[in-house]
Image (tube, rainbow, N blue to C red):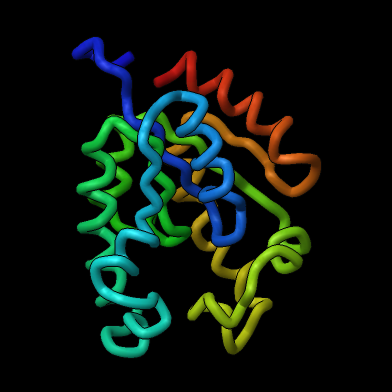
Length: 170
């Protein structure tokens, strides 16, 4: 519980393909809260992420992402952040006020799950995932309250562990 006695927002962070959306939807249902996927909000408001990268570059996309994350983290919701959202120092500072679940995953598992054509940072070089993850890992660890690995096993079993943690910490 937060100092105001109200439930805290739960944020899911981690690399692309870690399962933040899938886990987040299940967690939100179980907690009786809305689910917010900041990437989906950006798409709904501004268009496809690939197109945003093409028009505005990564820096322009990150500004749109920052605004979406800032709004979402004010809601009493389960919020899935895009893999690069933690790059912004203001986002990392704001995450101090919410319960942060870091979902991690191995490169082998994630490359089997995702469509690299839909990921602008991987489209031309799928092996970039490992480099991107290693560069961001310290930021994920800096803001995380707890870490769960989604590489193996059914999401439902992992979901039970995440739910138990979230009920105690949100």
